Image (tube, rainbow, N blue to C red; front, side, top):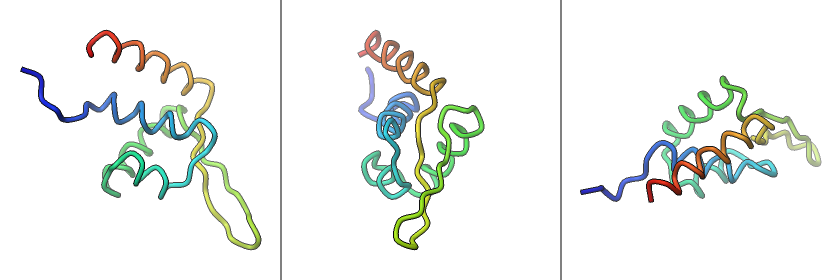
Length: 88
């Protein structure tokens, strides 16, 4: 019997999908429904592998960071989604 918990691939798929057009850490945290520790772990992995990049933004004196999907990340997202389609 399959459990109802999300797999790592499902979590990464959600993070990558949210990062397509750039997303703030808070947005990723809440929309992917992760703890801060979990999010840091996933982001570290995805950045290290070149799947997501950080982009520094300045908006009216407020500095921030956006997480954005790379071309490699877009290909990875397609592969993850194909795999998930097979097992769902």
